[in-house]
Image (cartoon, rainbow, N blue to C red; front, side, top):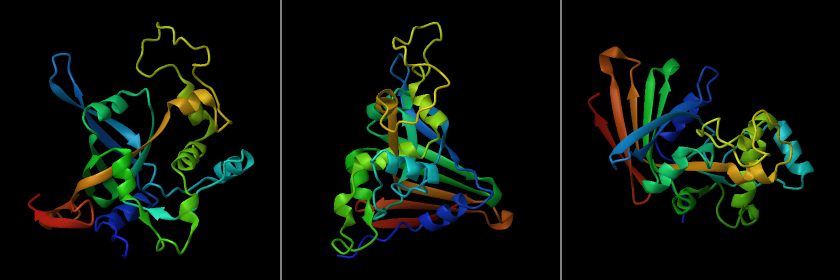
Length: 245
């Protein structure tokens, strides 16, 4: 059976995000609940880490992965799923669990005059179904050596030592007057060990699988366009609808 085609909205978005003037930050919104149980939105700016599991590894990351006997996964999978790295202690992680993995991401591509909004789901099972082999199964053979654990190692390695050290900060959002309870939790650390026990306990790769995507194109004021794509049959096809802006 031939692999599912990539989503029709993916190629233009990839082009915009890899252009020299592009910003790779976007707004990620989750659902929280007030003390009275009322649903409230929680938005924050996060860094786009590529389309899972494709990684543009820094030479220093490759060097560390090899020297520390971790190695690299072969580049055998692709997808339209968005990758973000986060600290498991962040509020958004708990909010995702409580909402069933519902999330919305918004890209504003100022240089292109375009906005992209994606409504998505997050779970390992959902992510696994979204992966696509780049070569027919059995021809490459390397997919059998590919592991989730090593892929997370690679994302961690692609952070600078100082950025890795932020996963050994005191718990985010807690009062400074409160004792972190662990002398290893402090600001300004650098982590060289890719298997650092404390940092890795807090490090997560958040993978977001789009179910609905909207693009608003403002480049031509006389003909502003808005397009919505909705995944059908678990992403085997995308239903395209043109909307009034």
